[in-house]
Image (cartoon, rainbow over all chains, first blue to last red; front, side, top):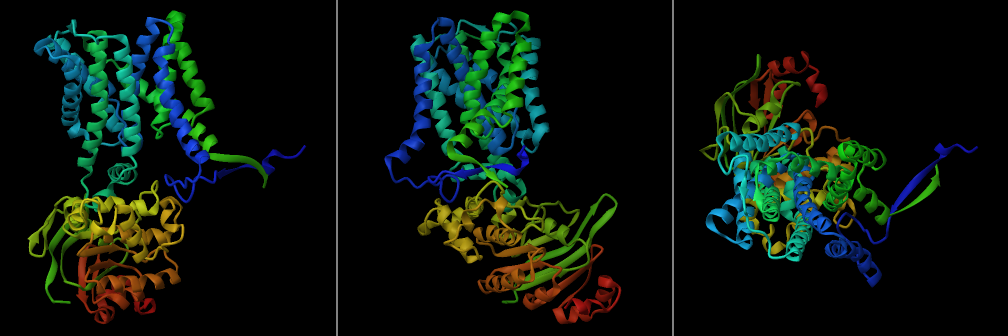
Length: 338
Length: 259
């Protein structure tokens, strides 16, 4: 028996990937399609989803998944490109949701107006409230951001403001199912490619610098608080947009929009999708949320099966689906004798 | 040297708990000179630089830059005034290629002021300017080195990258924290002309150094610290003859062996 330790897997970059990350030498249509194909598959896949969903129930799931996807994009951006692990997803969703509901109910604005205003307003409010926490890092920032949605929900409940425990009922819905689904899917696609572009722009390099080495960023004459605030603004804007959308889908804003699901699912999706890829966490949402819906059939045991599936992803593909897939796509592998 | 003081440091005191890291350290740096700071380990050299550049708040004392009070300002504001520093333990952005490391300082308000919003004015975008700066500091332009991940670069290049980050800000003063340490003799030999060139370009240098031979080749004046206090200051040849300095360094006359 030959000893298996005498062989190792050698990985080689494909020829198209030259010199360094992010610079490609494209000289033929094969190479163009090599780069375009994965992107096209993703975009077309997302656009077809509403058409292939069998029932009304599943069509609704698509919209909800898309909202989680927005939240997760923001989480991945903050955690893996700026170094801020935020558990404030529920905070962003709730803020956006309540702003949109108030604007719609009290001022009679249509969703076409409430959603953009709630996006910007929510981002401003979340950023201002998180401003004192920005010097914190790692687990400390995570804990403090988790505190916000819990505190806000309790305040609304205790003071009986903003509809108290009943929430704000009778918020306007979208004119049609198709508009509802396609607009949110387009927003997800634009956010994904926008963020991917952003992290490779000069300002994106500053964000990544803050994650890598914040003292060197300060020594470079840049205020880390300012750039962390900009990053939180972007991520909380995505979350608030999702929240505003959610309240128009449910035609209701209530304290359950501060539920911990919105803070936890983005982490799980990022873990199984592959952090730092942006696409991975998005796909993670499109896997996790439907699984959790399918498992409703198991009743009370649902969470057990859910946990088992999560565990399997983490054990078998701990690097994340997308990191694994990108490696397979971009590199040759072969066994060589050592 | 114009003889004009660009940096005036007056009686900096700093203590960490019970340890007095700096006690009433004062010195002036003249425009265009190379000012060396030497001293045994733990004598407070790095703390001094941290205090001047705002990374540590000093307990008392005053720092004037061209007559303007910059005491305890935030590090980024001080860097934007043109006072930059290197770190003793190198701090590159390991997940970025070497040339993209420089895009970050080129994004600072100071670099934007001098180079336009694209970073380099007529010179091109920030990536192009980065490659120019790296070439100036000793990265071969047509090799792969500037495009390599900072995590895969050897120490010599990382030290140069630290200096390059300072240069990207078009600084007036660079405070170098042991740029020669950890380098081989041949690497040091190639760094010395670089330092001389920086001085010729009109940049004032404050250098903390343990490599006395190389420091004394480039330094105009040297200050000696010991246990957070200033022992003496003067021309390099005067300083090494000083009895107190000899005692502080090795408790003997062995300092002469260093040189």
